[in-house]
Image 1: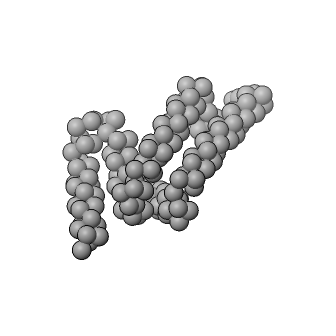
Image 2: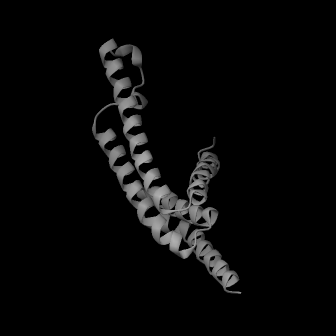
Image 3: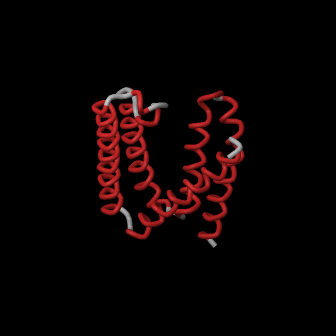
Length: 156
């Protein structure tokens, strides 16, 4: 009976979060989309991972630290200057400039992978590996869900 009550409370909490998304995004204007996505990610992961209370106490601080570190890395990348994504015409660049952009992109990807490996090690040393596996599966499902949800809103 206790498990059913906990499960019901978790579902009510998730449903409450999902209902708040439109209000959160409207209240925050243009910057609201990122917050809306992150709130949706938290609710999505919570539902898909089915964490116990003890697992949640371990998982969420590690996850939050991971997100902060990845965010700082993305910010550093943006402040670092021009990336291949922002270049309209590569033909207007010198070979050295193109090579530099590619190297910068590869360095960013390597740093991001290093951060992911670091937090994977933290997760697997503190949680059952099946819970960690559910996290990675939920992350992939979330990406698909996000593309489906926001791809349509752009007319894609």
